[in-house]
Each structure stands twice: as structure tokens, then as C-alpha cells.
Amino acid sequence: MGDTGEDTGEDTVASTLITGISELVTNDPHASDLLGAVVDAALVVDGDRVAWTGPAHLAPAADTAVDVGGRAVLPGWVDSHSHLVFAGDRAAEFEARMTGTPYAAGGIRTTVAATRAATDEQLTAHVAALVGEMRRQGTTTVEIKSGYGLTVRDEARSLAVARQFTEETTFLGAHVVPADTDPGAYVDLVTGPMLEAAAPHARWIDVFCEEGAFDAGQARAVLAAGAAVGLRGRLHANQLTYGPGVRLAAELGLVAVDHCTYLADADVATLADSGTVATLLPGVEFSTRQPYPDARRLLDAGVRVAIASDCNPGSSFTSSIPFCVALAVREMGMTPAEAVHAATSGGAAALDRADVGRLVPGARADLLVLDAPSHRHLAYRPGVPLVTSTWLGGRPTGALVGPS
Image (cartoon, rainbow, N blue to C red):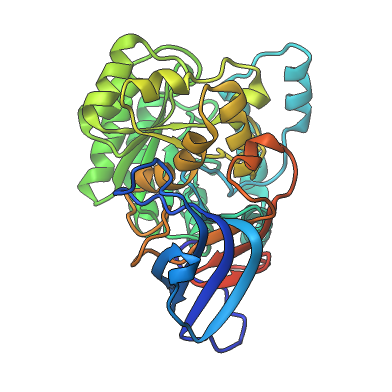
């Protein structure tokens, strides 16, 4: 998703004029407003790229035209944090949390057992279903992590499954230490044979640097091993309590550090100085009843912020970026514009991508159409299926039913 289009078997036209746009969110970094919004707008797609944007009355001719009837058009969502390769669910764990049992990282091991028992075909079908959900809600680029295999074989095959759907794949062998395993020996496995098997299928390497998972020294060792074979680093950090993860991410110059729920003033200052993207995951706090991250504090300090779903079976089983946008506005102090920007341009920054998350000439023509006149309706009308169509690489797509 976000890298290859769906093969419909039809010839594509050379260029398409999309007109009748009430509000076009471009995320043009040179615009005077955050979203680079154009009203009464049009957009020209040439092949899989944006060729032109601007006021409709100035639009050039194209081979064909599509009128969206006064709807808003936004860049497709860039979901920079998800865990889609798994089997089973943890609905009973969720129910227990809602009645007072706190969330703990150890619940991951329940999913590990189910994932190891699943076939490749079962895992692929499950990822396809979740990616289909995402696409119907406007997500055009998704990052997918491993982390529910925790053996050499299962981590490698998880990434091979994920790679059928996106190039943004992340090796997360350092998710938790398997039961009855020595932590030091497991880190040696992750940085040795497991990394060797996983690296051909991954672009990124990640570590859950958290109490009950991996400490800063272990995280540093895993990230260094990944860097030695060409994998770029990112971190889960400061989700369950205050800790060293955010500062480690900034020190190492990582592109992104995710969760960022418990932050000291020094953490915020370090993020602002480093340029590391703070990826916030409001679905987690909704599902765990933990405090929401203070996005307002981060934005006011000059930190770059992304919003992602963290779609996973334990702490955030949602595939909906619109839901996360609404939560960010309601619970995290963001304006509707800031939340939309974080889920598009912010997500692209968290993946170090300049070709997605914006609708400017030369960018990929990945976009969504809202059955609403403005981006504001995403938070104004929470839970309503406002995305009427999703375009991937210049073409409207349906739900994904198999690997692309």
C-alpha cells in the first residue's frame, strides 16, 4: 500500500482532472497555512503523480475529468505504525481492562502463540483484510511491523507476508522477551540469526524500549546491529512510564520515536532539538485508559508530530485513522488542521518520505475524498464513514482483497 497500485485490468488514462473540490488539502510546505488549503479547487493527475493543483477556474485540460461534487480532497493517510501480522484476538483482555485490569506488555505473548500456529496463508489473508479496512478509510501508505513471531523463522515469515502489502516493513524481533528465555541470550538471537533472516524483508528496525520489555542498553545494541546491515532505526518508547527511550532516539538521530505518553520536560526539549518525529497513537490510550499524550505541549515546543493507528490485537485494535484524528482533537489538544497534518505529512516524515502525505506537483497521487466540504468534519462528525473514495497512484481503488 502506497507503493504499488491495485491491478484492475483496465488501461489507465494519461491524465485526469479532478474538479468540484470544495477544499483541497495540499500540505504544501511553502503555503501560508499549515494545510496549504485551496478552496473551489481542482487537481490534475498524470499517471501516478500529481501534475497540477490550484483554483478550479485556472485548471488546465486533461484527458478525462472527474467531478467530486463539492467534496473535500485530502492526501491519503500515512499510517506510520501498525502491527498487522498476527493471528487471534485479545477481546477478553480488552474486556478485563475495561473493568479495571491494567494493560501490561506481557499480553503480547498471547498473540505470539496464535501467530506461530497460523499458516502463511492465514496470516496473509488476515493482513489483506486489515489493509482493506485501512484503504476504505483513506489510508494509502502503511508501515507494518513484525514482532509476534519472536523466532528466527516466524519473524522472517511475518516480514515476508508484510512485504506483499508495503515496502515500509519493520523488524521488531525486540518486542518482548519470550517466556522462559534469558534476556541476554534473546538479544543475541535478535542481533544475530534473527536479524540475518529478517533483514532482506525489512526497511526498518524497531525496539520496545520500556519497563517489562528492553532497557536502553539492549535497545542500543539492537539498533546498532540493524544499522550495520542497512536497517534504519525507530523506537517504541515512554508508553507505560517515564524512561530513557525518547532521549535515546534523539541521541541516535532516529527518524521517529513512537508513543511518547510519559514525557519529562527534558524529553520534550530533546525532541525539539533533534528533529525526531514524535508519533502519537491515540487508539492506544482509548483502548487502555492510560493518559493521552499531550500533543499541544509537543507542538508548542516545536516538535514534529505524527499520528498513527498502532493497529494491533492488544492495545489498539483499530484500523481507522479518521477515528484517531477525532481522538487527537478531542483528547490531545490538537486543532483539526494539526491532526490532519500529523496523519498525512507527519506520517510521511516519520517514514522519511517526501513523495506521500502531500498533494503537490511530483508527489504520488494518493488521495482521499470526503463526503463533507472540509477536513474539519473528520473531528466534527466522529465515527461517521466520511471517506467516499480512496485513490492510490492516480486511480480510485476498492477494498484490497489480496496482496498487491
